Amino acid sequence: MKIGIVGGTGDIGEGMALRLSPKYDVIVGSREEIKAVATCDTCRETLEVQGMQCSLVGTSNQHAVDEADVVVLAIPFKHVTPTLQTLTGFEEKIVVSPVNPIERTAYFYYAPPPEGSAAMMIKGMLPESATVCAAFNNIAANKWKQLDEELDYSVAVCCDDDGAKRTVMDIVNSVSGLRAYDAGPLASASVVESVTPLLLNIARFNKLKDVGVKFV
Image (cartoon, rainbow, N blue to C red; front, side):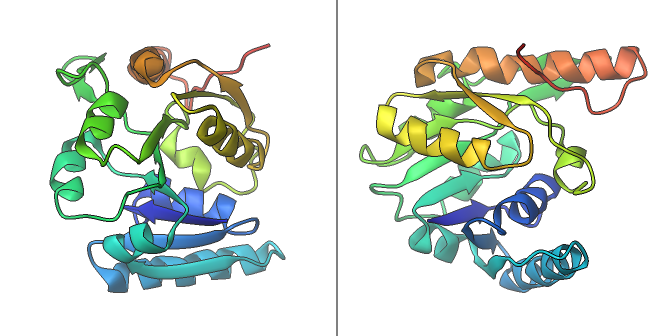
């Protein structure tokens, strides 16, 4: 399976490339292809030190979409609209949204678009044949790149298509200690996305680090 990461040179994108490329063919996309290539070089060196082989290609965001079976949008909410407006070729693709619309004043709070969630907004921007799944929303960005630490979190997955949901859940379950849970249709993604500002506030006001979710 080929997994394309749009915005693959950010912290989450690079961390996902590190975690996924030993098991899948990962295509790291960026607005600047040279940055994607450099990120892949860094990831390969990091994984080699761990004694791990990987499959990584650095390219443009558009090429990452074109070549992938599953596309991950590893971009901040404020960049979703301008980024998607420049890209085509999402037909028949599974598109994974870990995007959380969050604002910050004296604390973090959920600030969804009119569609109700980032995932629902993204669905409305893509071709009807694309299938959007919300996943990986509540994992701290820093934890992705810390390969010496297990990602021992629960991951809620929201999607309207059972087959696509199963595919995404299988991807989740292949990463470290992550465990995927069916969280219902895409319309329920707002509940999942809104947990992230809660986690950030708990971490900030209690002087904790990398707070996550685990269902037991």
